[in-house]
Image (cartoon, rainbow, N blue to C red; front, side, top):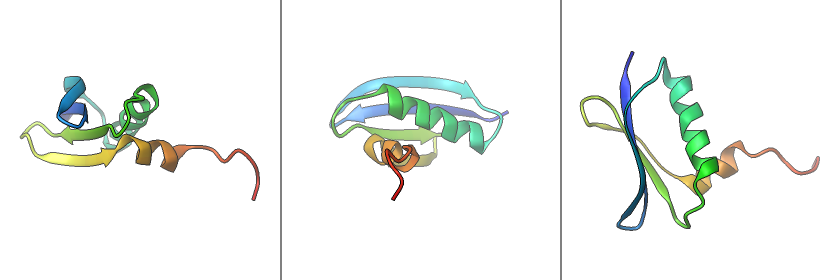
Length: 76
């Protein structure tokens, strides 16, 4: 299974970092990204995910993730 590293930063400060996280597939990768976005409330926080080779596979703002996956409060 592939391994990934996750780094959450707010400006120049690293807020959290997870290394060598083994995930079954890309769906599990995005599940982990959503979990991190929901648990981190740093203003302007950004997530970078790197694969085993150190290549960036995802770079996204956590505000964007939260807004992409949130459930609507009411029907339109």
